[in-house]
Length: 64
Image (tube, rainbow, N blue to C red; front, top):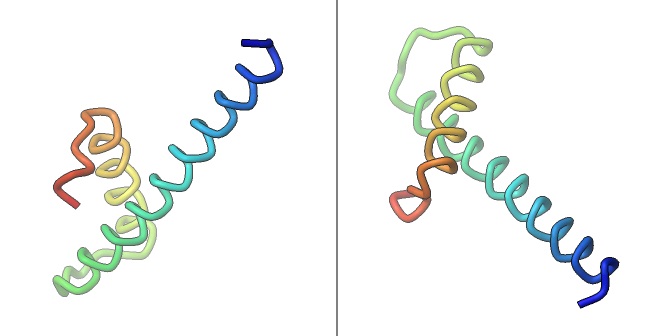
């Protein structure tokens, strides 16, 4: 495989991870806000970003 092809695969994988992270963050945010917690928007953002990072790092996307 040529270096360019390998780079394209790497970029596709990176874009996929970023897209999955954004989608997961949006779903987590909706769930957290729907729970009626009295958190600020900044607190909600921090919580869902951390949860998304943990889920993606552990390969636990099947639960979402």
